[in-house]
Image (cartoon, rainbow over all chains, first blue to last red; front, side, top):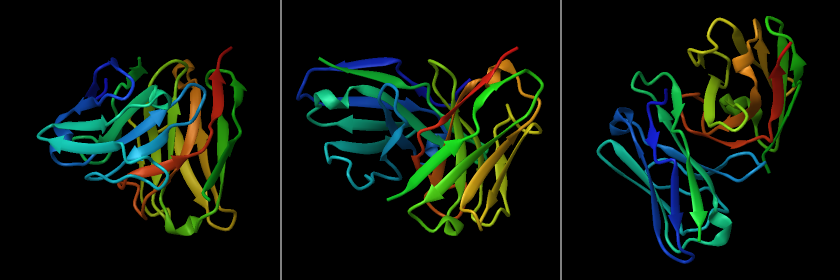
Length: 108
Length: 121
């Protein structure tokens, strides 16, 4: 079982803001990364560290952390943002990586 | 541009072995940690293993420890995963991913396109 917990599915109206959350005790000690995965494609890193975006990732993607919860926020969701999103961090031991179960984002 | 190309996947019987490779280009391979991550059909992501820039330290998921071995070849800019005693539950797409720094304890990305391993009799 994953040490990081995500809601299985979230929906958002086109152009609105959506927050996808990830909970886990290890998040109090370690920052999470967020990956976007579209059907049939490899995951793509969208947020890492405190709130950093790799080059090429739109600035509508942002990250934050509060206590044992880390969040990915999409401000002004676009149709192309419809995908599965996974959080990833080190586990409580610090010597393994774990992923959340994933959140399927639907843009209405 | 970072390019990671996995190979070596295929159909293998339970209990047998398989070796995956990942050819890396577009960055200084010897400076970065590398990882393997897998995804069973229709399921989520699972980290498998990571290795430091100089092969001095590795980490493994509990589900593969003692059966899988990660290694790298600096001369060939290549990452490998030797998988022994394969089980049906090892069936997955296996991705290699570039570390962000020299340690496998740092975040990672980008990823290759993956290679499918199917364990079945």
